[in-house]
Figure 1 (spheres, protein in one colour):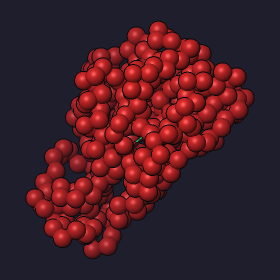
Figure 2 (tube, rainbow, N blue to C red; figure 1 turned 30 degrees about the horizontal axis):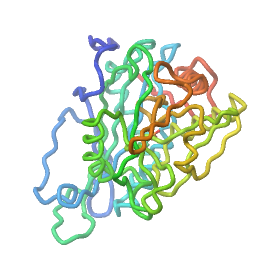
Figure 3 (cartoon, protein in one colour; figure 1 turned 90 degrees about the vertical axis):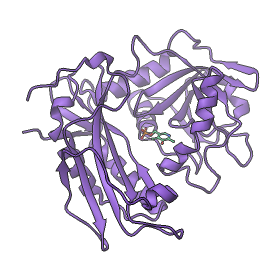
Figure 4 (cartoon, rainbow, N blue to C red; figure 1 turned 180 degrees about the horizontal axis):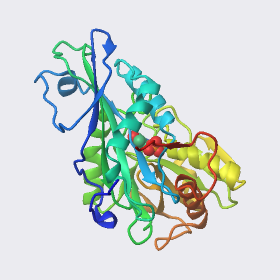
Length: 343
Ligand SMILES: *Cc1c(COP(=O)(O)O)cnc(C)c1O
């Protein structure tokens, strides 16, 4: 299989159309068998449930080439499971987990020429999503749905090393206390757009959202979970029903405990204690873990001792170990690495 002639190190994070995508339709109470198609466009009713009442959820994961040349994905079973949960939360018919895994294999294999080579730092981003496609005007769940999956190659997240981020404590809320914060719904992102655009305008990279009920506890950013390192070398990560359970964060917690022998606390984290931490990172599929150098709370600066020049040593160790596991340089826990059979 010949790779596409792309400038892997410089493709950035934007949509590049690839050859094939997967689609399955839900109608009359059942999913059809699903196919790969070359057609990258979707034709929909003007009244489709997704367009009127935002009935849609998604996932995000990556495929990459390991040191020994295999194409693999990282814990796709966890994405499959989370998407079932998201679908249920939005009254959509869940797409079966084993079929999700089969769709990942089919879509990645069909676009194997777009999987960036080992060592390029680039990866193939996989975007599964589903939405209500039949007309809905009175507020209720749609009767028909599409489950789809496309892939797009993305460049290395940290070009020329990880630059610590500056984030602000947001005056906006991301998710209601008993709302949809724990499911991967597009609507959570739609309402974060104003907050992120205004954060960027004011010179911040990201928003730290607090719990909307008391505004005293740390939740997450628009698309990544927090992980803190204490001054005595423990990991602390916020626990809340309204944060999205990041697979990367859960994997890093495992790595910290089982590979680095660190103590981990998953608990409520008060904003008032953040100043006592030694390091801070944001966890998600896109960057694995991005270092945070500074948090600004309405003019008060919280500067982590790791500084604004380089990634903290524990964050670096977590990053190196997890990416080592993903790339096949370090032995992975059972079931974490899913090889894509490519003919
Ligand atoms: C997807 C997502 C994350 C990161 O989850 P991963 O499984 O690690 O990619 C974190 N927060 C939100 C709100 C998300 O939607």
